[in-house]
Length: 323
Image (cartoon, rainbow, N blue to C red; front, top):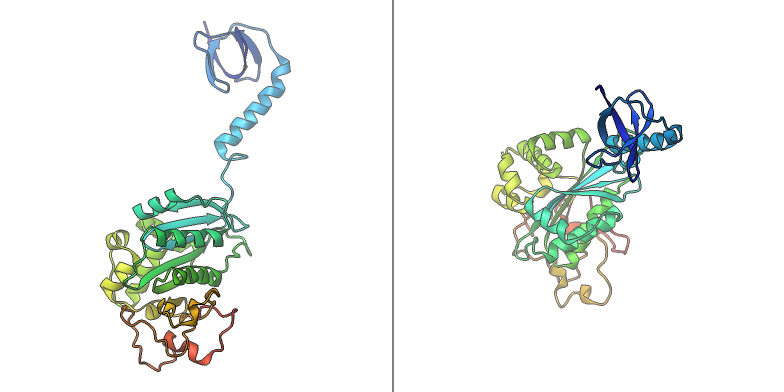
């Protein structure tokens, strides 16, 4: 006997209603194995009763199955930009047009551990970055003995105009201030990149920050392999290759140092630390902590030395990292 195929629309006690390939609705006896709604089954071509009332049900079910299969109503919200963070944990955050986190992906084991310890989906990107920086410190991913290097990159994921409204300066200040609050020395770099760079990084198995670090290193005559980038933190690479952050990323960095928490510093008052330049507004007679390697001569009078930025600037609550 000839067979036909049909999709199950309704399951009754002893019957099921199907729609066939040619659009006919049939009520047939329950098969030996109860099918699932939406399942395609094969039945005899015997002419069972046609059921017009189930046309609406079929239409709805077909639409739902189609949307589910092809990413309609059930699809992940559209990502407008990504923010990559490398601070030993390597993480990429995708945000929607309102800068809300819709997806977080880890690129190394440390990133997996960090993301497993927090829930940032649905948070504003600035709160998420602050949360991640706090957690990285709590989990021991920053060194209290050496300078740390934190890399961030903002990448648009849409070709539409005016879709990227992430403030990279604000991101820099958030990371800077949290490292300062936790008394970690180091550098913060925030780059603006492109989707093409992100694609090239993915093809190489690297994060955007790792790829940019590799390319910038080449410009300085330093070769860093993909395996080295994947197995080492930015801080480790900074020390092993002995590169200077100010030369590698001349316009996109600031420095953090916690020596102003010295007991004689007014920073120990109940007032919260001021947003300021990379130098955190050192007070009189308080000198930077030179026990930590940073590649900068503390006695230099060169204006490009970020340790001299505070000398010519009146500090206020509105001051931020210099660019």
